[in-house]
Image (tube, rainbow, N blue to C red; front, top):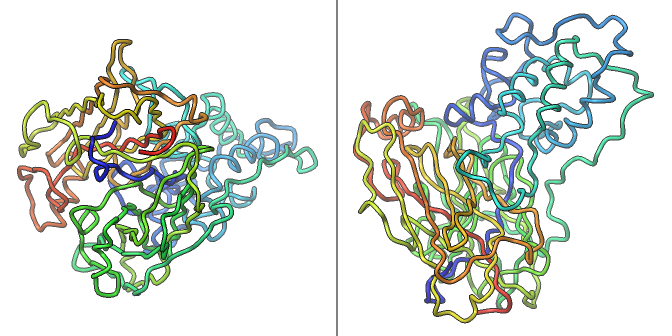
Length: 491
């Protein structure tokens, strides 16, 4: 899974998994936002409008039926719905959370019963883009998977149809602990050194600024946990995390490079993950860590989404890190495959013609057989990456035993970039061997039927699709997967 050069290895995928991105995005994320547009007039949590509870005048009724004798009706809030909401929704839907409304009490939840039932039934909430499909059955379940079973989805609809009964608090089911958004026992927290102000410019609400952070380690350290700290949740839309091993970004004035596009702002940084609002801290599997070289910098590519209601300042975005002075038994790194990573294109240079609705790009990477340390290689997390023309991406491995699909994101959304970690000990994670072929298939819709293209063109001041090639800019694309792997010992 890695080229021969030590310098080509990418550090661990300490990537955060999120419960939901309810800020401005393409149509999938906007529809999935916690409040529906028909009920509230906005689905954004960015603060541009105040979200109010839906009424029965919307196309999705809030409740139905009657609440007479509600204490005896099932399902009800206290016995059935509250445990599900606590487990799958409350990393976002809490007072002061990133979601536009809280769902911690019956009084808070009841007005949203119809909306909740509809979004849950459609798979929009809780949001999750790694799907099992006809062409992809991953080898292991995913960690922190918040999705509900069909029976649980039906329970939300039944609850709404009954009029959202409260039930008897004395009979309330025990509630699971809500998801924690804090990294346990962090070693150090680092934040941006120069405040940034974000405001709407013309019709543009979205801005990409890069922050260079100094972890301050004079000697190598071994990291097993990272948490993104969003300084101003109203405007921090999502974050990509890079390692700048040569500390080239230290020369940026004030540690900031504004309008840096979708990448790191320098050419040799290594992507190690991404975060969206509601993200839980990501820790490597037990016994796994990654080396952060002495003097390295960490770069955050921050997607800021202006509220449209006036300027907002961010002065505190950063990272919480957990590390040790000694390496773990397994070393982990991240290898980028595709464009612009390692591997070969099966169709020549990446180029997506204007007007193509289902353009396909494919890449293949053959695991080398000349590195002894790669005798036992385990895949523990996978991150897909495209830009706004992309609509579908799949990664799989081919070998003598057949095909194993690692990740399929068939409803790709640029605003939901995250890593998907397998829920298994490292010794039980998927193993790759020399000669295995890692395959990527990316599908693009470069027409005005793709909301991402509409948004991309608006940002560039254009009104019709253009040919799109490889790059980091607004009018560029990628077909890239980051595979987090672990090996015993070190290279």
